[in-house]
Image (cartoon, one colour):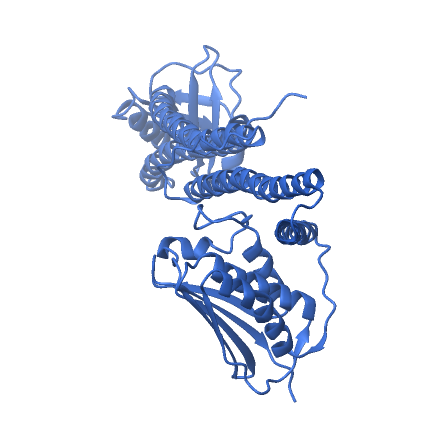
Length: 467
């Protein structure tokens, strides 16, 4: 099926309506011009005939001979006989006298004469035997003898028609000019819409093939310009997401390979040496357990992320003691902090209101946040954890003195696949999962940092159960 372009549809629809409208207007104007000139000519002849009848009315009581003599005199002395022919019509409806001296064609039809007898004035536009177009106007007269019944004037319309044609040509040229202007401006306007749409269509096809490098040239500040800007912004986001996804795949591959290599290496060592010394066996088993926990945590993050993307992530909500879950998370990382020569400072409050939520997921968030705080800190740094109630909410803050985050990266750190520090291990989805979990609980997870080397503060806010 052939495509119907916007330009063609505009030409056939909008331009068709415009042309038809202008054609109607053109015909109406030409008709008005013709009517104006014909009416003016008729009124002129009527005024002349009224002047004639006024003179004749002064002799209406004269004898037939005197009245006829006056009629002949008026026809002979008529001063516009070169343009207008004055005629006298007898009581039988025949032209008996003319200002030109020539007798008219006996076959001439005079509906204007009949109309004049009925309405005191009549006019008619017709063609003579030679094809000349004329205007005839008749008015009735009265006399004692009743020899004459009307006077009639006939004038050629050739000059008037030529004038009408000149005006009509001007009007038609104006209409044609308007149509050309509308066509040119319309095609330009349609092109200004079609060109970006074609670019968008071409770029969309490239996007479908995974090429996000092309951008739309945008020099307009209207809705089309907004659309082009939105498409370019979308391309930037898709390109960034694609880059983060590729980095995520590379990072996850590395994160999976590292513990698997360690597990395989120690498993082979223990298998070959039969365990070796107790210290060696203990060390090897410890490495295997730790790396297995890393793998398990990473797989759980990936599964959670997959469930969130598919909409199958659910919560098992109930009233929970948030201090118990936070205390467990702190306990899990206390030994690790000591081994890394780091310090966790946590002054647990006596009691806080319950939170309605999934305790396992909330503990998962605390573990992720504390793990990040230690991961992005160095030996000698501290992680300070506080929990308190404020304004009907439970606030948990985790503040470290580690490497910090650039101001430009703060808005992106919760984005999936994003890693502010590429030198540290991690998949880049842990914070995205944690943020989604807190959002599903009706709370918020906020991250703030004064800059690189100045540490980071993560603030978790959850609504408390009303007592």
